[in-house]
Amino acid sequence: MLKKFAAGIAGVAIAAVGVGALAANLSGAGATFPAPVYQKWAEAYKAATGNQLNYQAIGSGGGIKQIEASTVDFGASDKPLTPDVQAANGLQQFPTVIGGVVPVVNLPGIAPGGIKITGGILSDIYRGVIPYWDDPHLVAINPGVKLPHEKISVVHRSDGSGTSFLYTSYLSMMGPTWAKTVGASDSVAWPTGNGGKGNDGVAALVKQTEGSIGYVEYAYAKQNHMTYALMMNKAGHWVAPTAANFAAAAAGARWTAAPGFYLLLLNQPGANAWPITGATFILMHKKQANAQAGHDVLAFYDWAYKNGDGAAASLDYVTLPPAVKDLVRRSWAGITGPNGKPVYP
Image 1 (tube, one colour):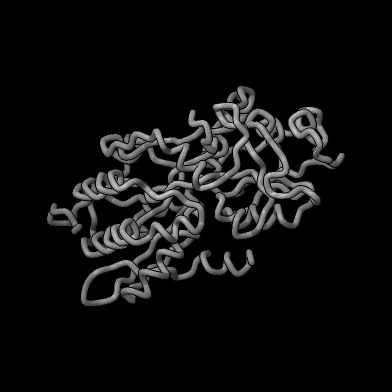
Image 2 (cartoon, rainbow, N blue to C red):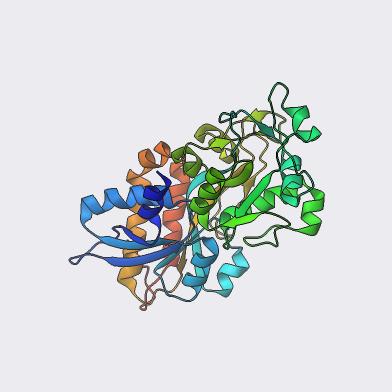
């Protein structure tokens, strides 16, 4: 299943974006976090229009580098760029969907949701100071669960990753020592463990390594039938990774276009909020050298906002509220062509 899925997203042509007499031939690169939903949107849009887009799921770090170098028509990142970074590089960003980052484990006999982990314990596992599954800290919060005396094999991302940015930002919130010694970024000096490239690479490494723990966007856990952990949220409740709980984390979000839609949804206070929730973003140049290409990219995402909610929900992503979609559409007036006029609509 993983091989088939990875083949469908990694460096293949996935979609149609474009309006005009000739079929569009556009390119994008970046986050693996939203690749499953972008693939579904792309397939449906291609069926409707016949247009073509090459999307490379290479990680948020690669997507940011490629859009900054103008080698793609758009970049994709789960790490939102701050307003000053956007301004310095002539970029504009906007959100597309919201999802959750999920700790996944490979422990025979443990079903999905059959193990509980707190943020503090997670940070200590990733620091290497909780080395075994039957550590007293884990046993204490998992009464009745038979945890083996087996070494924990830590798996992390090897590439620059917005998923890692969200994950390490959360670990920094929950673990003071992690914050001081490792920190939060799309690429960190991991204290321990082995790296996998992309969400699909981490999923594959966890699936093949007994005793392992990793982190992936929920669509990868769902499609690969992986064992996820329950997490304690800010309200002190044990919660599962579901679309409803991602939505609960986003319920209090205050989106504004002025700071470039910069927003983190980590450790939100809702009773059912999943603690490692985040939006994913599209990055485009504010001044488009090719107005038609810019138009076609925005035409695709406008179509996805109108027609893609069902596909997103099937993968447990949370779609943006209508008011936020309208706010994003209005922000597109700032993306202009060589003549200084908005490229869309």
